[in-house]
Length: 340
View 1 (tube, rainbow, N blue to C red):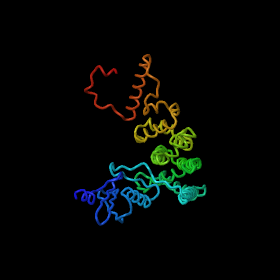
View 2: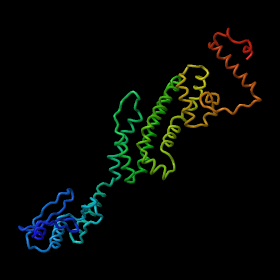
View 3: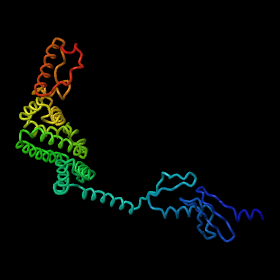
């Protein structure tokens, strides 16, 4: 009697942990769900076959209801099995062919032609570059740097790097020619100040332009041209602006340096340092001027020329006193320093 009860109500486990319950009313098969540990009942008519046949049949039903390539979860370890269901039916081959065709068609549809570049991408980049070149630090201009970078990225990926580089250089060259024309008609008394504004505005613009064109710089300029974008853009300013006005700027700077505070010290320092950064050889045109702002311009001090250095300093102090710059109260000065 106990054996009959065990046969009727015992749970039988197969190798997939699917439980079969034998009862007088029929055989109920339990299949473990992937997402839950609670067995899900599936009714099976009695007399269908042995326990192994029922397990294989239910396993086949589960496999048939699954899509091709679906990964199964093992009930013991809750890990994804590496085995996938693969079919060799003609339908799967046709689907694979359609996917290949769709991928190729999408690539062709996303390809950027030169006309697309000229009509869509470059106009947006040109407009953003204009804003960056002429922006005033006091004005707020809303620019999406993400969109600019995205346009540059797409142009480079679609093999338009050379075209993009030429357009960028031409655009900035045209802008610098306009700046040079403006400085050409500037009064001599305002040339130093206007040159400082143009140089500062341009270097500030490069701090925004160079980063958004970094993808082109890395995969085209540095790789194929063996140059750097910032260096190329600074050379444009040297060739089209600074070099055309250097012969006028140096005498004005020397005159302003001889008359302190004729030009603001910050403006003098900015212009002299900027010229030295653009072309260090310009320091030889006025060593005394550049040595006042750039260290190690003059040759090293020689002991045999100490008397010459002292005479030069005394001459400078005399010139300053004649121009109205007095030394102040000297009553508390030590007697030994009078001869110095």
